[in-house]
Amino acid sequence: MVNFKLAAAVLFSAGVATAWQTSVTSFVSTKNVQKNVKTINSFYQPKAVQARTSLNMVATDPTTGGGMFTASNSENRRVVPEDVRGRPTMKVVYVVLESQYQSSMTAAVKRINAGSDNMAVECVGYLLEELRNDDAYAQFKKDVEEANIFIGSLIFVQELAEKVVDVVMPERDNLDAVLVFPSMPEVMRLNKVGSFTMKNLGQSKSVVSDFMKKKKQEDGSSFEEGMLKLLRTLPKVLKFLPSDKAADARTFMMSFQYWLGGSPENLESLLVMVGQDYAAPVKAAMEGKEKVVTEEPVLLPDKAIWHPVAPSIVFENNEKYFEWYNKEFCPDAGIDPKTAPTIGLILQKSHINTKDDTHYVSLISELESRGSRVVSIYSGGLDFSGPVEEYFYDSAGRPIVDTVINLTGFALVGGPASQDHAKASKVLKRLNRPYMCAVPLVFQSFEEWQASELGLHPIQVALQVSLPEIDGAIEPIIFAGREGATGRSVPLSDRVNLLADRALKWANLRSKPSAEKKIAITIFSFPPDKGNVGTAAYLDVFDSIKAVLKQLKSEGYDIGDA
Image 1: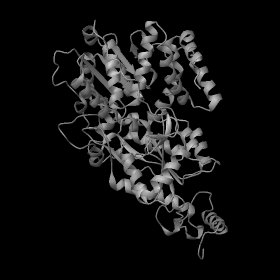
Image 2: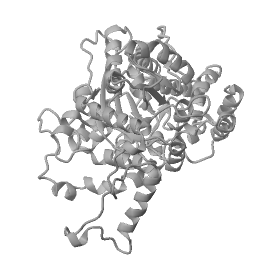
Image 3: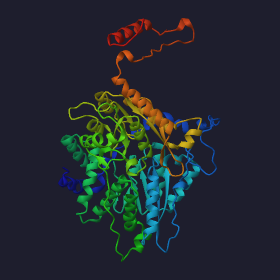
Image 4: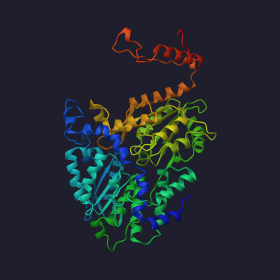
C-alpha cells in the first residue's frame, strides 16, 4: 500500500523540485550513456561521412530529409488547424526517441481542432535522430522559437541531448511550458510548469530516495517501479495542497501520467490541461470562462501480461491469464496446452498504450498458428527483470516458458539509458532458457533500411545488438520496421516467420532426445591450408575436441565413429 503521509512529507520537507531529483536520475546514467555511444560518435564526424560517400546510406527521396541514417521528415508530423474559427492557437513542439507517439499525438491534436471551442493547436514532432541533419535542426530551432509548449521524452543520446538543450534553453523563458519526461539530466533541467522547475536536479539529496528504498525493502520494487508508484500517489496528495507550487507540480505529474498513458484520449487531456492553464493566448481567452475538466489519466498497470484478443486488456498474474488462455483461447485456436511449447515475449508498454502494436500481434498470431502458447509481458519502467521473475514461473517456481524473445530490442535492465548487466544475467541464468533479443527498426523506416547498403543504424547496433548480447541475448533478428509517413510499426512478414521458426526450434530442442540432436564443431584454419587446420597458439585443439566428444557421448549424444 502506498504511504500517502510519506508522499506528502516529500513535498514539504524536500520541496517539489528536489523531490523529483533521485527518481529522475535513476533512469539515466550520463557516464554509461556516454560510454555506450563513445565508440560510434566518430562515425558522425565529417571525415567519417566523407569516407563513406560511396555507400547508399538511405533511399534517395527529394521529399524527405532527416538525419544521416533516417530520411524521415518532421513535416509528416506537422498538424496545422484547417479552420481556426477565431479560436486562440497554441503551438506545440515535441522531440521523442521513437515514433510510436506520432499517431496518438496527431489524433489528439486533430480531435482538439475539430471539437474544442476554446483553442486550436498547431503541432510538430521530431525524432531525436533527425536533429543530426542541419536543415532539420534549423527548422527545429525555428519551430521552438515560435512555440508555446515544448515536450521531450527519452532523450538519452549525449550529443543530441546537447543539441536539444542548445535550442530550448535560450527560449525557455519565452515558452509557456516545458515538459520533459525521462531523459538525460541536463534535458530534465529544462522543465518549467509555472513555478515548478527542475533546475536543481542532481544537486542535492532527495527524500524520494528514502521512499524508493522503503518500497524495495517492502516488496522488492526496482527503483523504476518505486518511482511509478510514487508518481501515481503524488497527484492524489497534491490536489489537497492549496499552494500554486503544488498545483504546478500536480500539473507536471498529471502530464507525465497522461504521457505514459499514450492514447489519443490521454494526450488530448494533456494538451487541453496545459493549454488552458499555461499557454498565454489560450489562457487569456479563457478568462471569465469555465475551464474544461479533463478526464483522469487512463493507465494500464505498471506491469502485466497482455494478449491482443483477451477480454481483459491485461492480466496481473499468470494464474488468471492461463485460466483464460488454456481453457478458452487454446481450444478455439487449436492449441493443445498440455503439449504445446510456450514462448515468452517481452514487450514495450508504450506500444500497447499508443496501440502501435501490429508487429506484436503479427508475431503472436504466427506463433499461435503453429500450435505454440504465448505469454506476453511488459513493464512500465525500464527494468523488465521483475515481470520476467513474476510471470515466467508457475506457483511452484518452475519456468513455464521454453524460449524468451525480448521484442523491445533493448537490454533487459535499463533499456537505452542505464544498463545493469549483472542483474540481467542473474535473472536470465536462473530462468535458464534461450533468450533472443529481436530488433524493431527504431531510427530508420523499413524503406530506408531496405535500401541502405550500410544496414542497421550504428546507434541501434550499439543499443539493440551489442548491449543485449552482454546480458546473454542471441540471434538479433530484425522483425519490424517503421512506416515512414505515419511512424507506425509494421511487421516484416518474412522475418516474423524467421523469428517464429528460430524461437520454436530453440523450444523444441529442450524436449528432443540428445541422441537426435546435431552439433557442429568448427575449428580454426588460417591461412587456409591443410597444415593449418586446428592450429592455435599453446592450445591442444584435437585433444580438446576429443574431450568434448567424450563428454557428449556420456550425456547420450550420438557421436558416431568419432
